[in-house]
Image 1 (tube, rainbow, N blue to C red):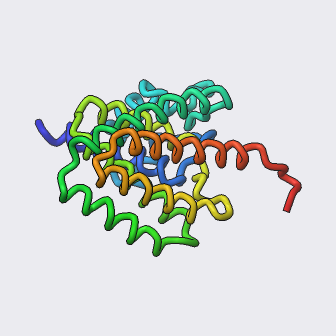
Image 2 (cartoon, rainbow, N blue to C red):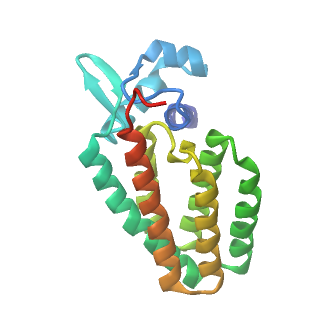
Image 3 (cartoon, rainbow, N blue to C red):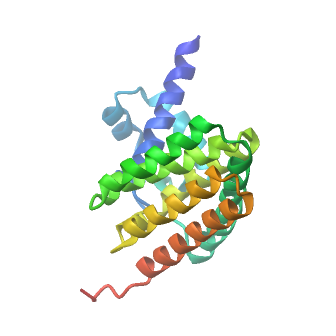
Length: 216
């Protein structure tokens, strides 16, 4: 009896990962049979996974079809407002509760992620791991759950802000400031550094969204 649950979880994770990595972008239509063929999963768990994603507002209806949802300007601003506060709280709690081992992992992440400059996709994946580590270092399961929901919705924004010219170098410096504050156990500084980091990312994304398509 455990097999259907496992298959359902796998189908959900596979589709979610495909959206998160940009295989399926906002506006793309998702078809049960095509997804089943792509992932080697039967159509029943695919159907259940699609229903779950629709319930979470990651998919929306276009007639009888399900498409990957997109965020308008106001929705994006609302999402960033929530993300900024929750991420800041996570950094504050990490400064209070993170173990020495967790701080060491965060430091190592910053060092290793600097090697990914020039590869926005790899840098985006590393960025998600870095933020997830801060969430876990908060040692607050309810906050982690809420941030997981927020980060799922971030997948609907399409291209990463780390693709902007020079953003990778700036982001790594911001990550270093966050980790330094956490290591010092400076809760206020960690909170501010993380909030400032998200604010700069939002400004960068807005510029990307509104740049002149005819500009070189």
